[in-house]
Amino acid sequence: MRVVIAEDSTILRQGLVELLTLRGHEVVAAVKDGEHLRAAVTEHRPDVSIVDIRMPPTHTDEGLRAAIALRSELPGCAILLFSQYVETTYAAELLADRAGGVGYLLKDRVAEVSDFLDALRRVSEGETVLDPEVVQQLFASTRKSDVLAGLTGREREVLGLMAEGRSNAAIATGLFLSAGSVEKYVTSIFGKLGLSPSDGDNRRVLAVLRYLQP
Image 1 (cartoon, rainbow, N blue to C red):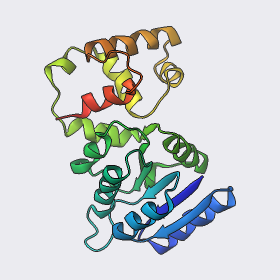
Image 2 (cartoon, rainbow, N blue to C red):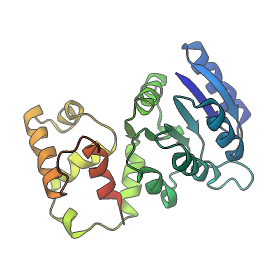
Image 3 (spheres, helix red, strand yellow):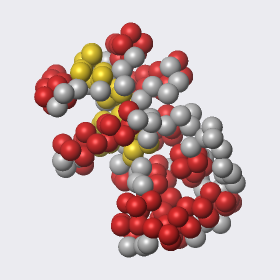
Image 4 (cartoon, rainbow, N blue to C red):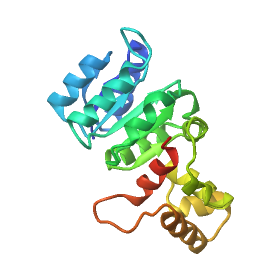
């Protein structure tokens, strides 16, 4: 993979460069703020960008806002947010373009390098990968519509795991269900949310967005 890294901590930025290089990936740019992130992605068109949320000059949400701008300017460019914090104000907006290729992992909760690299690969391939803590806080910060009120408790559990980027097989394992049962729940969720089959939209992503929308 060709990767851009945006991280203001010199030690962590260099550590990510070495980690990815040693595993055969090409880091085409490693920058420390949102302005240089946008310039690097525009120039290099990487497979995926790893972006910290809080960067100079204010150390609040520069990275996240730069990521949103990039998704608007370069639809479908893959972004993996990698932060210590859950920023709910703009996170749902980043997910709302429906294109996939978005991830949000918390630095303190990544236990294995292999998990991080797998998430990075999946985001580069167009999947949506969210840390469970991110999902929980996004759910808590949004108001559920009457349509969502029609979901059963089990359907909400399944939808929450879908939001984390889990496959049906992984959901079945996590909830101790058969693959067939999970498929039925997923089909029911799509039906209740009014998501008919479409070649142009990823219904799993749309279902998650419907759940997250205010």
